[in-house]
Image (cartoon, rainbow, N blue to C red; front, side, top):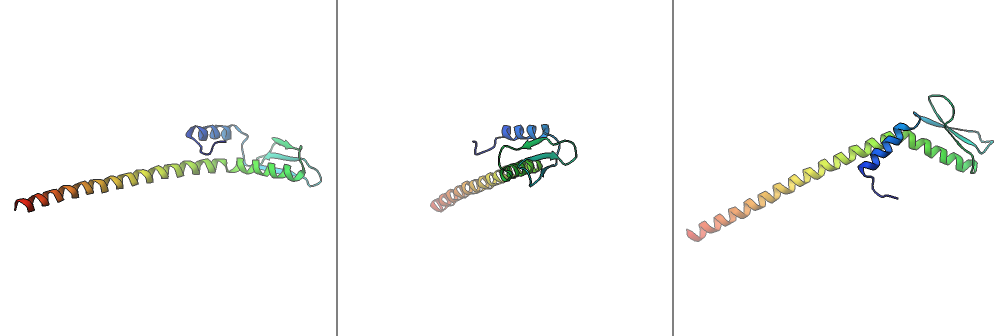
Length: 121
């Protein structure tokens, strides 16, 4: 599994998010049975049924899927904002480093001039 999301990965996730049934989603469960349903909160029929595992596992899986769907847009947006901010900080840092290098070069030139004046004067 990847450790870093590329821009292509983020676009892929956005496409999958937008293609899925509209949210928010919610979990429907009955403690008397192992079956758990995922349904859009807007109404309509369930969009997923989890019933092959224990009630606890089905419930945990359903709540994870619902949370992922309901927060995916926020998470993707935050990733984009943070990446943009990181690039801004890197660019700002690069400009600061360049300024310092320019000042150091200028200082070296001034030292040469002073040395030259001291030697000739």
